[in-house]
Length: 67
Image (cartoon, rainbow, N blue to C red):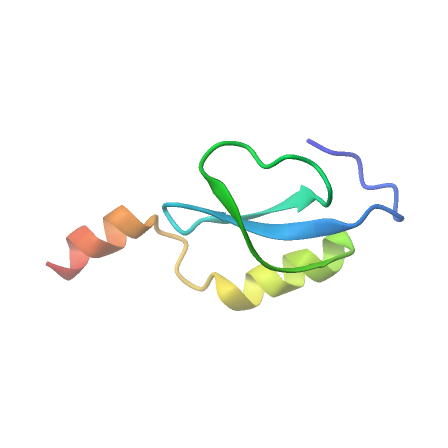
């Protein structure tokens, strides 16, 4: 989606289904996404996401499975 030139700063973002992604810092977030803490290189943000997002199922699916 966005070319990683090596000098771009990214942010960790999350949607309402608690799915994570990286987004270029300073750009307006798409509807439904919020900053989830953490910024830096793309590799750094992807490493943070790897720590934060252990269950890849959307929130609604996890909640249904818990019932």
